[in-house]
Image (cartoon, helix red, strand yellow):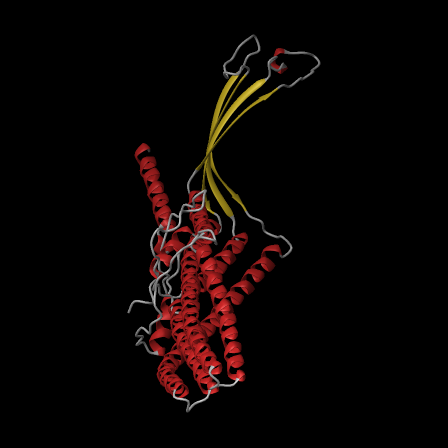
Length: 472
């Protein structure tokens, strides 16, 4: 008999261990999906209590992205949420194991009987009792399993959300970095244009003083100089605004004096639209999160459906009672007792006026909603990738056109200035050629910046991390 009981006990233990392995194994906890989100780029962020010291040397685009990913408070909050979800998963896993509970109580009773007898008298100091119980869930209508799988999926969802936030932060830093370089180039171009106009004003003034040019030419040259100065002020202000925003993204005070280095150049990009779409459907975190949302809603529905089934629990308890705090017998009417019990409980809510039924219908409707949202997201991803791909191609074509325009405008300005010095051209020809050259240079700078900005957005739209766009 003892051997049989021992075998049965060993079998129960093995079944329990197997169940624990099944529910804690990641392959069992989540359903098979065609996409897998990449891990976050940075983990374990610790924010400083004071602003971090600014970099001592020049900062490249890759260094700016790296610092933002490590120190931005928004990403730290997102990662803390992911850590909380992982702790919730481990907490839910503990629901599969046995529970141990203890209680200690004291009761004072007064019983009056007639006639009085010693058998009916209660202890004068009261009755003290101590109980311990071990219980093990046997069957909860798959509620525990569904709840654990739901929290495990939520932990994965928050992990993918960290990756998504990091990619978005990378795009934000790169966009502001490129805007800074854009306005820096615009300011340099406007300073050169201002220098050309000031030189033309000196030449026109000298010709006016000797009677070779009318006063109108001088006034027109002065007007164009003032316009160039006004435009230069606007470009420098836009550059400083981008600098403040870039410092903020990096976790630095907005007024920090940081020197960012880089050059707007066209880097090669040889992927086709089909390759970009395939990479997006395979790598984008939000697509993975949408699939997880569908699975989470299904697990929530299974939790609700647990109300259709009985709840079974095995238990063992022991209770000791006595008329002293140490549970020992004392006095003439002292008492001491010990009992233990082993058994199983089964409860079943047979009828609840449709509460579980309609809750199940509600959860099923939410599953359908998540599935439609997933399909809509895939359609939007296709549009997003194609629009950014076309923006990259458009900017590349604009660069080629703008380079020719700059070359021709430079030559036209030299010709107009030479003709003016030889007294065969007009002041308006020089000013117009200078304005055309400034516009052509601005268009070339804008085309190069737009190309790199669109490329940064395209990389994020396909779920890839490229911290340095300025390096081929």
